[in-house]
Structures are given as structure tokens and as C-alpha cells.
Image (tube, rainbow, N blue to C red; front, side, top):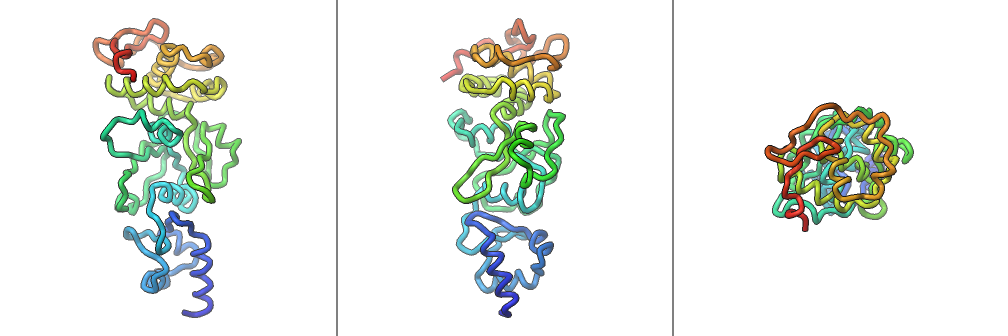
Length: 273
């Protein structure tokens, strides 16, 4: 191998962490031709866990490396949200037993084809832009913490020595989860999660409510917060929050919440642990 090519592989390996992935597209855009990458694989420097993507030999294929690659190297405007964001922040015991883990991703970008071909236990669920009218940051990798906070996002550290993954704050993640509720079973799950949300920040809650366009999500969020008598709810300013008009029948035969006019299952207490 020439000194030039030896220097290129050393540079590449120095940039790759134990779980980092690089796509063929990224490699080509950074001066690594297909033939050169093929030589790296043949020489044992790189391995390909799926067609079109590579990692250093001896690296560990993990879901967080996939998301880091999508956000930082592929430059995709995607963030971890909803149920998986809450699990990542310590609420995994509320996930439904026996359910395969699915990394919930929000954003308008499409996932590269190689993502679905990786031999991982976790899957990736792309849920679109969601119900918020907040445009995503132009670059997840370069956005400051203050910029991310304005979108209800932050960097969650996963492992040491690696860049944090952009995911929803608990305030945004709860509303994202509420928006996806379609039956009583999901109401029970969200209710159990809401019971644990004792430290939500009133101003951040208000910001997310103002920018959430789902009437169902906002009413369900507020009704469950009131049901659990969270102290922070009294400090949430609701001026500028559109809660719509009329009643919302979330579950058939449910009990109508008197304040937020949405039906909830009458047996919620029986499903709390």
C-alpha cells in the first residue's frame, strides 16, 4: 500500500470509534474510492456489516452507532423521540413486556437502505415529522445546546468519548407519545409514564404545547398530568395553547375528563403498577 493510501486509512481509523459506521456515500465524498475501500476490506482494516456501510474491524455494531452516523456523518435531520427517547432516559421499565425494541426516529429525512439490513436486535421506526410545527435544526451535529433546547431537543450521552445523540426532552417525548395513542392499551402505557413525570419543566412544557399541532396529544397530556396532580402543571402558562373545541372520544365507552374534554378509560387506576 502506498504511503498516501496508508495515511488515508490511518486517518479514517483514527476518526472511527468502536461503534461508528461510515457509508459508501460518505467515503466517496471524502476521497475514498470504491476500489480503495475494497482494498481496506481485503486487508482487514474495515468490515461491512451490510452492503453500502462499513466499520473498523473489531468494532461493535450497536444501534447508537447507527443513529450517530445518521445524525453526524449522513447529516440527516432526525432525532430520537417518543417511547425510545423516554426509555433512553431511564423509563425503560414502562415499555411493554416482550416487545422488541424499536428506535423511534422523527424527521422528514428518509433512512438509507443499509439501515434496515443491519443485523441488529433493535429496529428503526421512522415516524415522520410528528405533530410539531418547529422546523428541525439544519444540522443536528452542529446545533448548539441552546438551539436544540428551542426545539425541545438535547444531546444524550451514550457511552464515554462519543458525541451525544440528539433526542427529545421528556416534555417533547411525552407529547410525541401521546400523539401516537390509538387505543386503551396505549393510554395505560402513557398514563404509567406520566405518573413518573414529576420533574417536567413548566416553561418547556408550555413551549412544546404551543408548538404541538395535535389537539388529541395536548388534551391527553394535560388530562393525565392533572390526574396525577403534578405540581408543575399549576405553573404551566396555557396562553397561546390551542386546545380546540368540542369533545374528543379517545376510547369508546370511556370517561370524559371534565376539564380537557377527552375520554379516558375508566379503569386507569387498575393498570398502574
